[in-house]
Image (cartoon, rainbow, N blue to C red; front, side):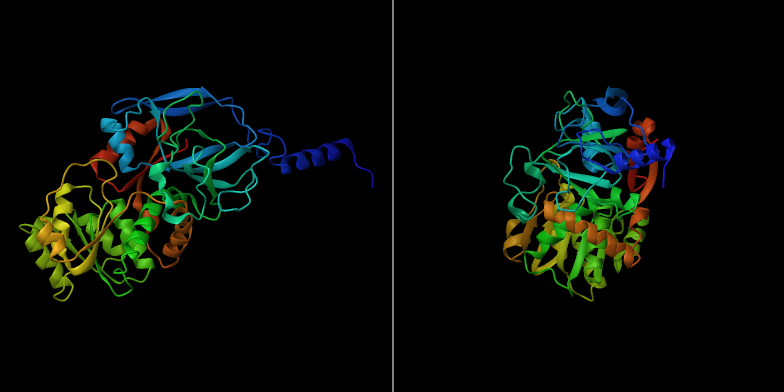
Length: 400
């Protein structure tokens, strides 16, 4: 059968569109044009983002260009917005992001877990190990993200497209990233904070104390504490007390799987709170506790809620929040408390998180309700002010 010229051209276009990655930076998804420039929300001074426009770099053989769909605001972002504790200004923030591959280099075939990737796939980033090639997917706790670079917390350079609070993000060779096309957009935005809690629970399990029938206290019911409850619930732990001073957050905690709650505003101090917790545990203190507040006073109090021989995971301090006062004899030694610290995650934890989110959705936990507010990129300053006001839970900045 003979074909006319239009039919031939249509077939050629289809073939070219399917050859993703065959030439560096040349393949874009059919029907989607990549502009020459991209907007970036640049934190240029304390509490002030400016929307700047930069050229989109050429995509090299090992690089990926991603069209951003959305990104959550992390507590670390809020600290950087208010105080610049890392000395990064000017900086493109945003590390809880996700988007769609629109261009990729010819050497990019699979993600960091070996899953095939192509133009049009949805991805998230994790760590950048350009300076430490020995780190691999299955090194478990050999090194967590604290020893690596992260998009959204990179010093500004001549690329500029370094954070997810942008129209596009430029993923360079040596980065770790994952194909998460099987998750919906809101779930993908929650991957990074959920990985923090998957890691924390894995750290807790290493003590040998956190078990299926453990009585568990989770102190602090912001997004981190609420996700902690959800992770525990998916593990089958059914006896969880949430501690916070906000009734709305305590109510949400019970939606996530908490069986009871304690509002610290109703008690005269840690000793009274411990009695309130014991009452809800049938006269027992907690076998294990997760301290998620980032408050030194919260850390000081948490020991009072734990039984002799119990365990504690402290994960609330992502930056230096100040010193806590404890009594080593009464709080640790005489009670033989086993304590672990947790800070962000490893690559393995990040991949495990995808399965956690699927499990949480399958059993009906309202994970996506954690995202209470969405703002366009052009209103990022308003989004951060909403975050600082603590009148919502997870605040997200979306493509506009």
